[in-house]
Image (tube, rainbow over all chains, first blue to last red; front, side, top):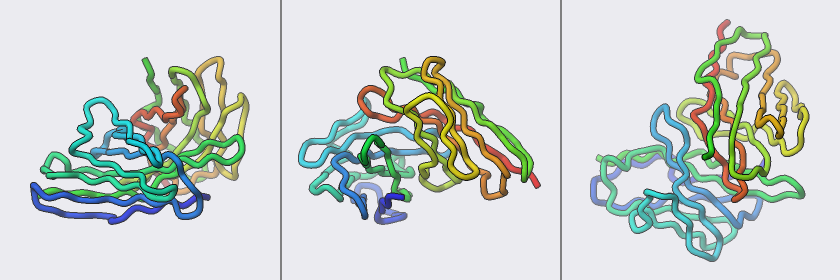
Length: 117
Length: 109
C-alpha cells in the first residue's frame, strides 16, 4: 500500500514556542493532504485541507494564523503550530489523498504526539 | 446534517467472526472507507466500497448498500491483534471523509 511518513513522531515543547510537523507521501504524489487532530478516546477531527500550490482550507473553529499549513510540493505538507499552549497538546495526524484509477483513498501518516508544557 | 452511527464497543472471541455495522448520512456520496486504529496509533486503511455489494480482502470483507446508507465490516478468524477501533468513514460530495467515534472491538481468548 501507499506510504505516508510524519516527522517528528513525538515532540515536547515549552509554552509559547512553535513546532513544525512534516507530512510526506513517499511513493505517490498527493495534490491534497489533510491534517487531523485527535484527543484521547475521541474521533478524528479534520483541521484543514492542504492543496499543493494553494492556500489551505481550514475547518470552522480552527485558527489559520495559529496552525500554519504549507503544501510546497506534491509530496510534502507541513503544519506549524505557532505559540503553542498546553491545550494544543494532542495527536496530530496527516493523510494524503491518492487517486489511482477509480480509487480515491486517504493514507495516513503515523501521527505526531505533541505535548506542550 | 452528516452523521455516522456505529456501536461504541463490541466483544468477540478469538477465532470467531464479528460484523461491525455502520449507518451513515452524508451530503453526497463518493464511497465509504473502513479504517483500523490501534490505541495510540494513526488509522490504517482496510477497505473502500463505492458500489453496492461485498468486497472481500483476506479475513476482512466490507459490504455497502447505498440506498440504505448502510455498510458493515466482517472480520473472520479473529486474532488477538484485531483488537482495535474500527472506523467507518463515508466520503461526501466534497471528497472529504466524515468520521465518527468508531467501534472499539475487544477480542477475548
